[in-house]
Image (cartoon, rainbow, N blue to C red; front, top):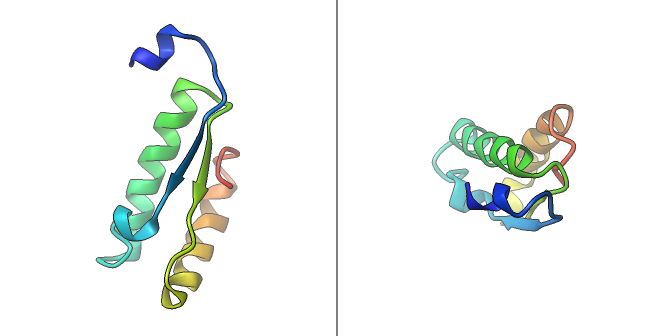
Length: 77
């Protein structure tokens, strides 16, 4: 909430899919990433969320979720 007091700023936030629950389930990962994207967009449309590279066995899931959410969230890179 404090970020809103300082006006719109550009921020780059990097997240690791495994820390968002990907190793538990793809759906949990997607839910948590969606929450982060919504919150970041609410504070500043200039906030960029970047997905860190993960283990090779997760590439397909990360790519699929990213492509799906990028249709809604332009702040996902």
